[in-house]
View 1 (cartoon, rainbow, N blue to C red):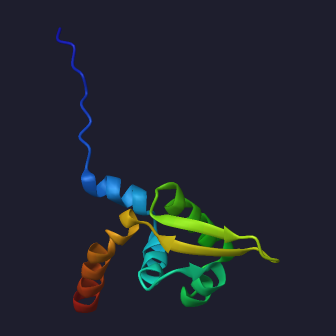
View 2: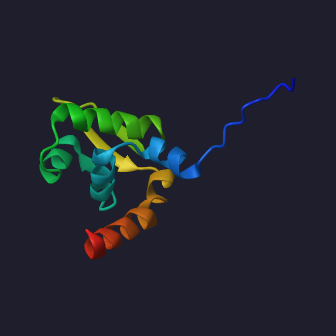
Length: 105
């Protein structure tokens, strides 16, 4: 009997989606492509996102080195979010998705 080793084939699309995250991540990225934003600014721009969903999304993007979180020692603390180089590299892809959505959705 042969010993069969199961080989996992990694899909680069699946990897990319795991890094980017869910629906809210795309909307956060859309806003950050325009420049650095504070938490409250993001929440106002992204309709129907709860504070928890926004926090979870920003943490996910930060862990995956898409977003940089910068806190300033003010009272209350000022926190700004901006894209890393890796995050900016997603701009072309997201723009194409926007064009596709305008045409087909």
